[in-house]
Image (cartoon, rainbow, N blue to C red; front, side, top):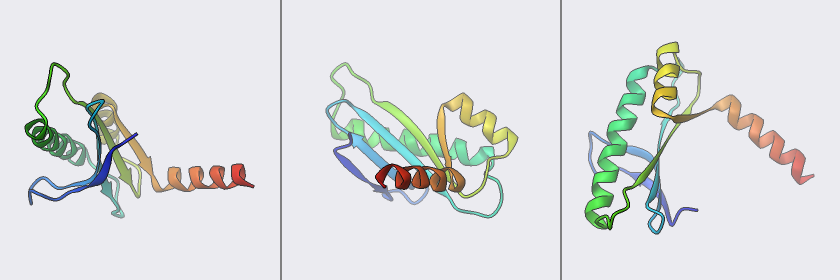
Length: 115
């Protein structure tokens, strides 16, 4: 459960669309939203990793580690599917990918459960 959820727009070159932090457990989710018409490329996933590294660096300066490193969770919200190279990169980096189709399916499932 996060203590803090927001975006991180402190550095123009390393903007993170979604940042959720659990200070006690030293866990952070860093997410990127790509709402473009074409498939998402591998470059986007590499940039997500770079952004996450910057976020973790700032978190570490704010609260120095006492023997426990930050657990980083990466998430990509995409309008379309990923290219095959991006799919391989997502698996390699353990990035959770949620497409628009996934979101609609999950919302429909939730609506059925609430009835």
